[in-house]
Amino acid sequence: MKPFTDLKALFPALQQEAHGQPLVYLDNAATTQKPVAVIEAINHYYREYNANVHRASHYLSAKATSAFESAREITRHFINAESTDEIIWTRGATEALNLVAQSWGRSQLKAGDEILLSAMEHHANIVPWQMIAEQTGAEIRVINVLESGELDLKSFREQLSDRTKLLAVTQISNAIGTVNPVEFLTKEAKAVGAVVLIDGSQAVAHTSVDVQKMGCDFYVFSGHKVFGPTGIGVLYGKKNLLNEMPPWQSGGEMIKEVSFSGTSFNSLPFKFEAGTPNIAGVIGLAEALNFVSSMDMKQVAEYEQSLRERAEQKLQAIPGVRLIGTTENKAAVVSFVVDGFHHQDVGLLLDQQGIAVRTGHHCAMPLMNHLGLKGTVRASFTLYNTADDVDRFILALTKVIDHEPVKPVHEEVPDLFAVMPGEKNSDLSRQTIEEALLKSGNWQDKYRQIMLMGKKLPQLPEAFKTDDTRLHGCESNVWLHYFYDQENMTLHFAADSDARVIRGLITIVLSAVNGLRACDIQNLELNTWLDQLGLLNHLSPSRGNGLKAIIAEIHSTAHRYY
Image (cartoon, rainbow, N blue to C red):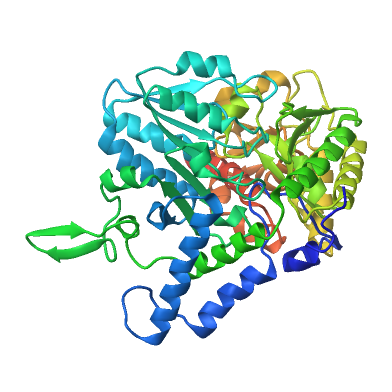
């Protein structure tokens, strides 16, 4: 199929380099890049008619209000809602889900009622319902997911009953790309009297959405996943349900009249839009929806599928790569694992070659647990990606896998602390580490040095990798042991991880603390030193949190002997 060759030029962020190489952005399931038209629409609002909406009679406010409410009509048309009263602005899909849970759920559910979710839901479509279940006494039921990633329709029918008051299910899985038969699910759920909520966050940029045809009662999505700004989202709700629901948040705009004897609330949609809204975000979202509406979505879907199929075919030809989510009915999301590699390491090494993917559990931990995984590498495509992007991604992954996986330095149970960084007979002293990192001219070189250090770190025998010694707060597994030398009053640490980059960071930290007295460790400014080495500003949040957890545990251990 002919690619959308001209589209990439419309997205400024895609024109830059990453680590000295042209950027290949394959993290579209997390957030999409923004076209010039969206950026300029936001800029134009702030430059030309910045004012609050609905509340003033001057020219700027009238112009802002007109654009704001025109955006509501654009959104109504985009998902084919019946009325603009059914379009509620939120900060994103997460807030929209919480709004329905706290307003509809809290007022309608009671003990004995059941909430039906699927095992592939995003955390945002799980946790609000768990909270409501605790508050109301309702129970959560879960639809099984088959090994292929397909929703188990047999399980759905078994879980669905006259006790089901709500079905809340994703249209497309963000983690593995499964497209659910939402029209069928909605029809079946409505037949037993259930209310239906569809999470369309992963769908709106890839397929035409018609909420009336779908038949759902609620539909939510986020602007930033459909080429729009962050911090803006949409809740669609059927008018009769929204009218019956109590306000969730209170303040300005959502009221008609306030006195100390009582308050009356505004009509739809303003009843659910307390306070000054994200006006610029709404205007930017409208421009993004106009951009998508200008496309033939059938052609877009076919093109994206061609990219996915190209990627999957090439991945299946690479030894050690296993696809996760193999159902035929999929969106342009490719999730996979690589034998012998932690998903964090794969993502890091791809990033060093200019390839942006997502790694981890993708805010779908129940699904990962169900599939027996800690996480995956996810490449997600959209209309501005190309076949060349796919090929560069595959070439980069091949280079990653060509590196030998880390092998244990010892298999027997040794003296764990004899060869750890910082000890006298270790060549990974603080001084040698400082020399290696400070000589590195750029962040890519530093990362390379960190990975090499991780290779030199002795692995813990499996017998030492227990739940009792595993640290929390790290996305990868980290185990930490210590020994206190009473004669010399010094502490000695041994640690390991299933992620190479974390092993490298462990090496750096242990080089600074091993063999020191507890008081010296307590007084050691580790964060300052790591900043001097040029590490803290460049670590991703997941890796940074892992490093902080290791340092916190070492300080906690030292405190016990201080």
